[in-house]
Length: 235
Image (cartoon, rainbow, N blue to C red):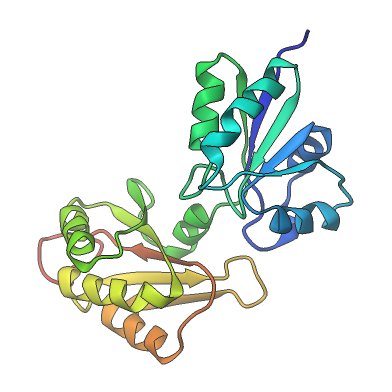
C-alpha cells in the first residue's frame, strides 16, 4: 500500500486569485481537507470549482483530530491541512497534526503560498535580514511590554499580528518603548480590495489608526532600533 501524505497548504490571505496551481491540484486530489474554518475553506473551493471532503480542525479540537488523520495516512490517503488564510501552524492551528504525522514517519510536504508576514515585510522598506516574527503578543500590558523591551535592542526588524481592537494599545507601547519617532509600518486587508498600508513614526501612525479603528487582522512591522537612542530608526 502506498504511504499516506500530509500536505500543509498555505491558502490566500484575501485575494482568491493568489491560489497557486499546485495548491488547487493538491486540494482536488486530497481524500480530506482538514480546515480551521470549513465555511471559509468552502468559499475557496467553490471559487475554483473544487469538491472536497471538509473536516473542521481548529485550536479546540486539533489534538482530537490527530488519531483520525494518522488513520487516513496509514490507509495511504493524501490529507490536506489548511487554515483560514495563510499557513497552518503560523499563529494558526496545525502544528500538532504536523508533528504527529512527522513523528509517525509519514511524508509531510509544504505547499507554500501567500503570507501576511512576508507581504507586510516586503512593502515595509525595512531590512528583511534579519527579522523576527512575534505573532500575537500577550494581551496583558505587563507581559506585552516586557516582550517588546526584550526585542527592542536586538537590531532586528519585528513583524507582529494584532487584533483591530488592541492595535492602539500595541502602538502606544511601541511609541513609549521605542520612541514616538520610531518608524513603523501598519498593514491590514493585504491583497484585498481595501488594502491599507500606513507608514511613519509610531506616534503618528497611532494617531491615524485611532481616528478609525481598522477592520480585519492587522500586521505591524517595526524597524530595527539602532544607536540605542529613543526613536532611533534604521541605520
